[in-house]
Length: 169
Image (cartoon, rainbow, N blue to C red):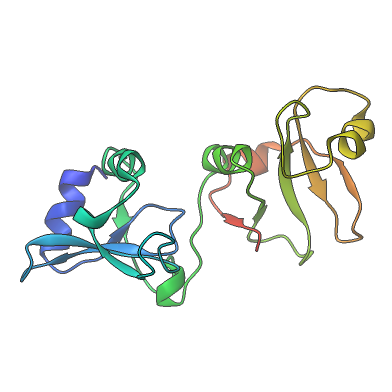
């Protein structure tokens, strides 16, 4: 749903979030503002709940407001409420390009995850080691297997259409 609908629900007392968030936003009627309940303490303020007017990441916050993927935050889909946030493959690609590791919620192998390798600018991985895996210097997805191996990975149609992607901790 769009943010205008999410804001109306927040004003009715329903916490709202984006699919990948571990936290949520809620309306504070006394302060007449949105409170951002973060998955972890904000690195700039040291708080785990911020008034939206305190954000130090204005562009990021505004891009969130512009999203049309708002949903109610529940104990099933929000980490700080006891759940697990999930997202689609398009978001998984976006997060991998930012250096994050992802996996499917239903995968049995506990230590298995997918990550993105760009040999020209990826600072998180040893480029020479991973580039030699596929014999190319082109960007690609790799999977860390449950046997601690790293090999190139290509998604199946099931993976691409799945909405149960999660962050690998």
